[in-house]
Length: 117
Image (cartoon, rainbow, N blue to C red; front, side, top):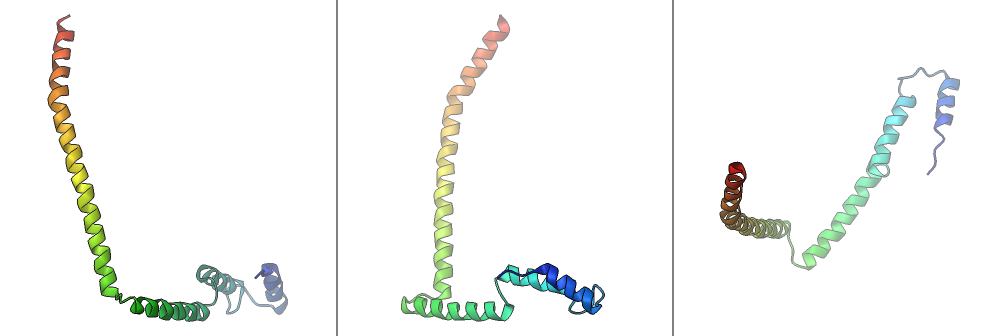
């Protein structure tokens, strides 16, 4: 939907409305920004969201899913992912320590020989 914003300003000027009064350009801009953000009028967006919520809720109910089950499934999945990630970090930390046991003494010996030259 294309809107001629200049036309609104001309209409206000022709009708003698000072800026900032009810129905002025600033109110239209605010309303326009809200409509742009929502994607339509607030009532229309509410009705669309209500209708979609009913459809999705009925579909989830047919599958036997409830909001509580969805929450706990998300919680369990997140916890399992964290456990896998932390186990990987634990293994990675073990690799660092094992490598450091070999690398640090060799580095220290190399530094001692370099200083003695």
